[in-house]
Length: 323
Image (cartoon, rainbow, N blue to C red):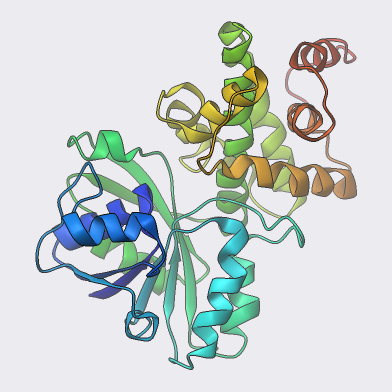
């Protein structure tokens, strides 16, 4: 399978290495002005993995867009601009595989919806899929396997991608709920930020409550949006907690910790951008999401973490499981 990977960060470059290592014809695209891409270009390494000489590296956007399958791993808030740029190339039908997790802040749209709006409506033979689930490059590059999920509204595309992308390193499952998987994956980054905030104030013991209550409120949002609430307990969300809530490698957890401590953190933390549209969706749909609201209040309304926790504990007592 001929594949282009757009995005040369640690996950995008890993995806390119991985797909090339299992026998696909892979091109990794990066902008000429990208420091990350230029480091990869000069060393043929991302610092953890060395790239085989048969994997192409290019900053030629037109050439990169020729592949029938385009895997994307960029900041979710930049996806619309990227898809518009690909559409401007007039390169015909594509299968897009989205390897990032988020919700567009301005529109509250899921990422697959952006691709549909900006590309598929004019190229109806194109398709979009999402690649989600737990996995850190630091672990995978050491040969530690993981399980992940691929979902799409097109069953043929979903099955083809799962069959083509599976290996001993990553076991893929067929997703059955695009709405639930996308929302679950996006919101787990918010829970990751909350976990980092708890670490910063030495309340890591609350992570058990955070994960169970967090997954429960996310399940309510998924249900309100027309998805299967059980998806919150699958690989897209709850299954990714070990990598997001507890791992030292988690960028969202590390961001939450740094934010509370007043330390600079310059790496991408998707949960920061995602929490705003999630809180807005919860309000519009009358869904109670107190943990997400608390994270929002700390990040955007200058609430102290200790005050946010006190507000959560002051909520009315209710049954643990309710509808």
